[in-house]
Length: 80
Image: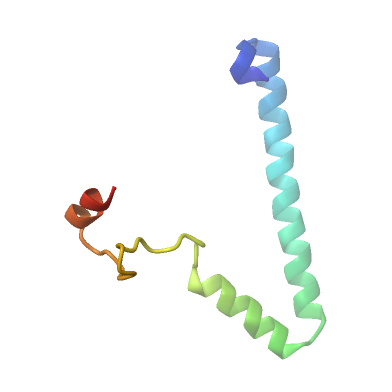
């Protein structure tokens, strides 16, 4: 709402809610990690750690019309 109306009171509310949301996300993550450690399930622990270490962002690579992965910026510009 703040971005639409640009009212200072809404900006303050927006920042406060944003901080609370960030804190809750951190608390939720910490709780899940603590439960994982307390469960003593070694397989789940390694699965979680490997998932965090891989750093996959879920963005697929660009491919050309023949399905080959495009590496060069020049070729990417030619495709799009």
